[in-house]
Amino acid sequence: MNKLILTISSCLIVISQAFAQKDPVALEILDAMSTKYKNIPAFTADFSYIMENDEESIDEKFEGKITVKSGKYKLNTGGQEIYNDGIYVWTYLKDDNEVTISEYDDTEEEITLSNIFSIYKEGYKYLFIESKENGTLDIVDLVPEDRDKTYFKIRMEIKKPSRELKNFRIYDKNGTKYLYKINTFKENSVIQDSDFKFNQKNYPGVEVVDFR
Image (cartoon, rainbow, N blue to C red; front, top):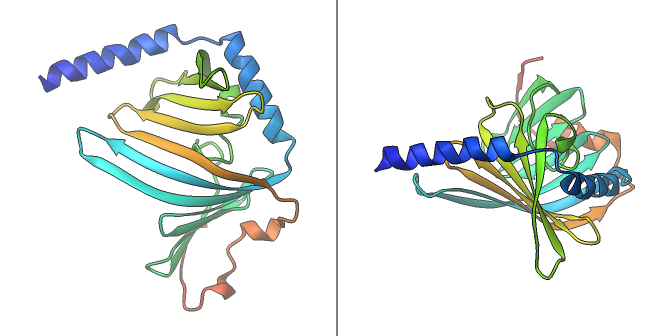
């Protein structure tokens, strides 16, 4: 039975990839959303994160906050703080009072609220699925052109007419689904570049693991 389910799931993935295209309706929606956020120099957002896998009985939830400016970001979530200044990445684990430092590799694609607004522009096909909630919410699917990705689809819910991103869900090939829901969004013009660097002075006794 499990093999049958796996076979059916694999077929559905192939079908979804085959029928995905660069849909002009989807592109218009995505471009409007991207333009909206591109014109915001810096912002902070509170979000909810849910990871689900029915087969593995996984149902994890937590809240987070992200600050973004010109590709830099600071992320607080799940007992850790991540700072990215575009050159280095600091990952601080609160329970261990330990920070790991590494060079930022922009070729390693990580889907976050810092890049989700423009990720569709390269390496994806996209398709308009439907409008719901009386036409106030548009659903668009992104399908990666690289079939070696661990996920096969990103589903975005975009408000209409504001073109604000309500949430996005990542569908992994192993059956896991990751939902990011934006709860609050605020433009913030007072964010400084120094906010995206880990300040060791604020963490007495922190253990530093430096891979630079």
